[in-house]
Structures are given as C-alpha cells and as structure tokens.
Amino acid sequence: MAAKMEDSTRGSGDSSVSSSNMTEIPTVAQIIERQAASSESSAAGGETGPPGSLHHPGFALFKQGAEARLYRGTFLGRPTVLKERFSKKYRHPRLDEKLTTKRTQGEARTVARARKAGIPTPCIYFVNYQSNCIYMEDLRCATTSRDYIVAVQSVGAGDSFRALQPIMDKIGKILATMHDGDIIHGDLTTSNIMLKQDASATDPEVVLIDFGLSSVSQLAEDKGVDLYVLEKAFLSTHPNTETLFRVILKSYTKHSRKSKDVIKKLDEVRLRGRKRTMVG
Amino acid sequence: MEVSTTLDLYPDTTVSMVLFSGVTNGSEVRKKIMDGTIEAAVINAQMICDPFQVLVAVNKAVHLDKLDKKKTKTVFGEILFNLSPGNNILAAYQKFGVQDAERQDVLVVLLNDLQGQQLQQVSNIIQGTRIPLESLRDIRDEQQIIKLFKISEAERRVGRLEDVVVCRMATKDAG
Image (cartoon, rainbow over all chains, first blue to last red; front, side, top):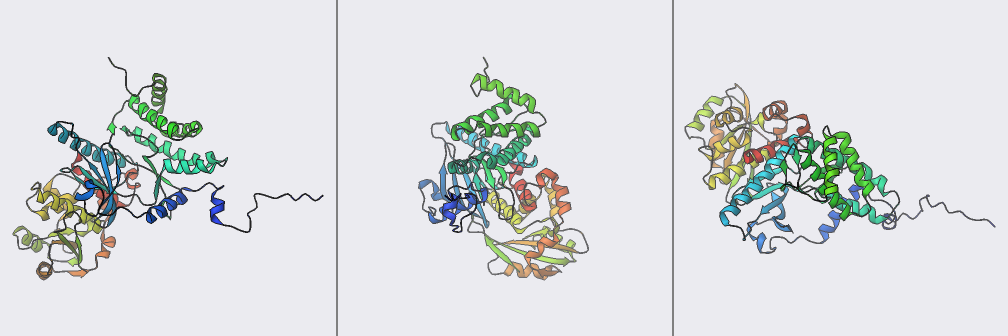
C-alpha cells in the first residue's frame, strides 16, 4: 500500500491569494492595503456629513469622541486630519473656553516635545486657537496596532507570536524613549499606537497619536501608570496576549535609562488596582 | 513659473509664489519693501525647504490677519515671522528676508495677484532670473536650516526636513 504523504508545506500549483490568506499571517503592509481598499469602496461621507461637519468645507467627519471630532480632508495639497475640540455645554462658558484652548495648546506642545525626543507623531500643520482645531498629517500607509494584532490573531496560526514580537519590541523602545523624555502619553491603547509602512520601507514604523491627555512628568509613578493603562487596554482588547505585552515591557526595560523605578511603580499600581495615587 | 494656490481655509485668498535666481539688487528690493512700493514677502530662498512650508506660513499669517492678531505690522511681515523658529521679529526679517548679499536667490510671495499685475511690477524691480519653483530643493541650505532650528539628530529622523520645520512652525506659539 503506497501511502501518499502530502507535503503540506509545499505550495500548491494553484496559488489563489484568497485561500492562502486564510492560513498565512498577514504583514503590516497587507493590512494597510486591505484597509485602504475597503475604505475606497465605501465612499467617504463627503461634504454633507452630520451637522457638525458643515463648517468645515472639504472635510468629512469620520470619528466622534468624547472630547473631539475627527475629520479627513485636504489642506494645502496634503491629506489632513482635522481634530476639532468642541465645547461642553454643561460647563460654565468661560471656563469651558479656557479649558478647551488649554487642552488644544497642551496637545500641540507635547507633540512638539515628543518629536524633539525623536518620537514619530503626525506632523501638525496648523492650530486654530479660536476654534480649537488642529490640522495635522493624515498618516498614509498606516494602520493601528490594534487592527494588526486582531488581524494576525484572527488567522489563528500558531506563530502569531513570532510575527508580532518584533512590533512589540519596537513599541517598547518608543515608549522607553518617550518616558525618558519625561512625556506621559496619558491614553496609551493599541488604537493610539499606529504602524506605518510606506511602499519603500522594509519594516513597519511605530507612530504615536492622540496626545490629548498627555502631560510632562519626571515621576516614575506617572510613567508606571502610563504603562498600566496600556496593559489594561492591551489585555482587554486582545485576549491571551500576556506574553506579547511582556515583550513590550522587556524592550522598554532594555531601552530606557530609568526603567527600574518605573517597572517597580507599575508593579505597585497593579497591586493597588487603581489608576490614581491614593492621597488623603 | 508662477505657482498659484488658493488657501483651503480662506478661499478668498490666492497665493502666488515665484522664484528668482541671481538677484543682484537685494538692498534696493529691501528699501522698496520698507517704503511700501513692493507689497510682497521676499524670502531668502536658502532657508526654505519646500513650497508647502511657505503655504503653511501664509495660511497662519492670513488667519491672524483676519483676527487682527498679527505680531507684525503687515501680513507679509507676518509670513516671514511665521517662518522663523523664534519670537524675535527683527531676527526673523534678518534671517528669512532679503539679504545684503551681492547675489542671492529669493522666493517672492504675492497675495491675490489674479491679473498678474503685482508680479509684473515686482519683476520690473528685481534684477534676477525667474526659475521654476522646483529648483527650490536645490537651493535650500539644509545645514543652515538644521542649525537655526536647532534640530537634533533624533528629531531629524522623525521625517522629512520640511515636515520637521513645518511642525515647529505650527507649534511655535503652543508654549
């Protein structure tokens, strides 16, 4: 009885891309391409979006958050994201105005500071302090690390760890550089950590976005909390990724000059189970 | 050779940019700017990375002009001021404005020159040759720009030089 052993690693003559995608781990570039293709087919809202977008001709609303609305459009020939902080009606108007402007200013300031430290962020083109609008670079050829991790994990292949590890490594390094520059992001989630890969690039690049809740601090406590926030967001969004997150921490420790105290605080915060210092 | 763009946020404003090479009468040009004969921003082309950078400076200048919140007296002065990394107006004019050199390359920025009349007038005064705007890339002095803006190696690696500079310009008054 001649048992024919099928060599499953040998590529079949029929190389239909769609079937191989089901078992192959996608690269970052592939995910970026997939998202670009699907956003083209579902035509963007255009100029007539919901009432909020009427006063931004040429920009279309694509996200509404608790603090700001995000629009996409073109500014001086460049693809641009417009972040508009809106007023909260329940606040006292004068206080509201001051607060909103302060947040906008703070975000611009921290982005400048982050870039000085070598952290890739979208380039800010223009800040309108009257309307609290920030016009910034629309990252082309990028996806969120959230989407990429989800895509890799959904394939269900055994070596998803190997595919994601180098990216976690890069993330850890960027966070180390950021904290060494005494910058606290304030809202670290996998949706705020972007992966960018141009056609010419061999490796994806980590880009941080949304510095709306950021601050400056030398305290290991604040940096520890920053990492804790990411850990909570990471583990809740991506189940069974404890080992993956550990790669981030390992890379952080390797690249940061002040990591020892920060990790110590992280452990303390984990035990406390809260985001705030327990004062008073 | 004359590139015109309309500002997305201020559609009533059209911006024209023209590049002049080998300008020999820099001092005369400066005099005519100061006495109001020339109503344009005449920029030291070596200090410009990319036309986009100039448009960003113009956009901010027009924005502040409309709010009457300019730091300088004219919208053209404001363009020069916006291009500069610091808050000293005189230093901005000295570094980014027309120089005292025997030969220099300048970028002229005009606003709402729909009939081309202003360009005609400026061309008659400036003693130099009009060259394509694309030549700006060859004229720019990267080392001088990096030195003036004090761009560290780490920051330089974040992206293209023009993006590093534009982001600095945009966040200058954020504190």
